[in-house]
Length: 213
Image (tube, rainbow, N blue to C red; front, top):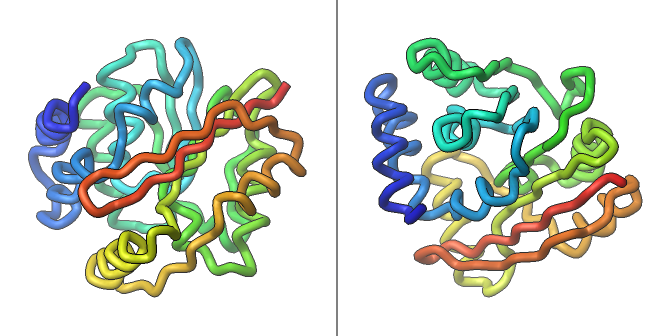
């Protein structure tokens, strides 16, 4: 699907709620390559979305693929309330919980797919490896991990995303070199399956898909 189509679907999924949270869901398909993320998810799977925000990725998956069951976790109470209302009001087979992952509050179990999308740059550098290793441990044998984050190069793109997060998240972010993320996940027993870099407007994206054999 094209970004404009995904944005229209997001507007259908999020017709109400806090204005800023709602509009962020509506606009995000124009800056985040959700069509690539959705395409990376195999059929008939369970998905754990780490740092799910308002639940947009799982909601798009659920609407586009009726064979997906998902759970999302995030540390923002407001985002989780919006995601829970979305699942309830739209009758989606999704579950959302507030959890502080940096403090070790992780859901137990394993999933066919674990996604961690635009999360690592919000994590303190001292916690980034631990978060990735714990994410890898939630992947079932035969499952995959979808990692996507913002690019560090070129520097002007990184600066634009930093400005974005200063304005919207009021946070000074910490970029993780994608080569380091790959090394840590390989050390955790995963195998790199797909590498895709792309640009959307002035945002640069690094997508990596890993498998656990």
